[in-house]
Image (tube, rainbow, N blue to C red; front, side, top):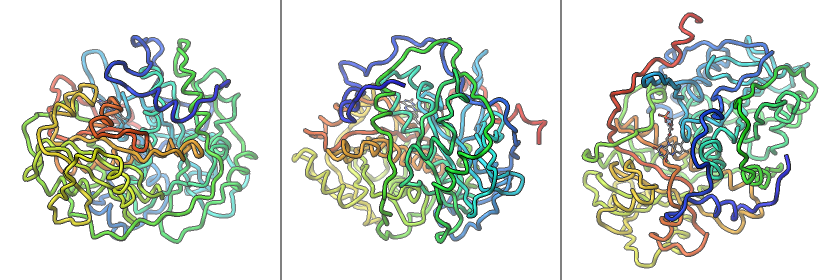
Length: 535
Ligand SMILES: Cc1cc2nc3c(=O)[nH]c(=O)nc-3n(C[C@H](O)[C@H](O)[C@H](O)COP(=O)(O)O)c2cc1C
């Protein structure tokens, strides 16, 4: 792959949507070249996984109290539940002759660029090796069998992206959406693991070269004419705080010496329109091995109580993006505060214990209809440092009135009062869902000059935003409302509204929550109806 040099800042500026002009993308959609959403490797041993999520009756509320959920034993049943809850299908939608699958993890445009892998040192019925998860067949494809099992037990998840799946529709901005989707997938694994009494941790020091070797992404003959996958992240799954550290070099060397199988399928039958800037920024953001220091979140009071008594698997599998909101209903204040409380990192609490770095994303909230809270523009700082940064860089005209909440630790401030529906709609590429909701928000990242020295951190900012998004998606379901991620927004319109005059704070993602109006024309079919005779 030949690439040209591009800086993070140049890519970020270039991929902004602006009121006057959207970022470079295709003029229309070439349906013939849309990528197959299901990657498979032909010629591999397939291990069918049970569809067994209903057997785990952890309550959603208990996910946040790890000690109350006993650790399940890793086996085909629990690994099946882990992958199904994180990356499996959630339903089929049918409209006339068109039928498409939805998944438990959301994805921009439902294009699902993220692929997932299991790396195991051997568990019951799953031999030591590397496996690709095939979400349509709910099975593992054995890519690599380790010749000998490594000495220490490890269970890892690997994520990679097929950028073309998103670039087909979104052109140059697609790289951002792929990173958001990785964030959602990290959180989806974190919640799925918590349902089984396990914990997920991003293996922060690991390099992309490690990931390429372990997942076999650098085995060019196995991809031949098929679309390549780009390394994203490795997740360590474990059951206790004191666990054996992962020896990545050891695992990578087993993978190098292992027996590899399988040929990746070609996803687009037609030739592609190229978006070279995506390869360029991807190259700029390659991560070397690092010595990341573990970050410890501050001690916070217990979470505001959960409004739902439902099972975790039900909340996870019922999650959907709203396509329209009623524009009338209000959200109880307690539920609003609970959602904000859930996006603060806490020790041993999913999903933020998966990414152990200090929060760099803060929320600017358009409050439309929260009972007992004046409509207007609010800000939630997710760290003390973030609050300082916001105070220094937002317009000096803002009020900064601390919200009168019983949850004192929420650094929630009213910046201005009044109806902000129109501003929210316009900033979110004129999408009504940002205005008809009970609240919508923008995620402001601490985006400083350091990013050019550690460009791979650009990816992590989107991941953090995606993790916040996944927490909001599930919390919305638990509060009997619905959410939608918003990747289409006019970046600088938000910055201008807030009086931000430099690049110290940049908007990375938007989100909206409200009472959904269902599209009754769509028929819903069960997720694994095509496998009903298998188990
Ligand atoms: C990163 C990201 C950006 C998204 N942007 C938008 C958006 O701008 N507008 C919208 O209506 N939906 C948006 N969505 C919602 C997706 O369209 C939705 O996740 C996808 O269609 C799958 O449906 P599901 O979430 O119900 O499973 C976004 C989702 C993600 C994860």
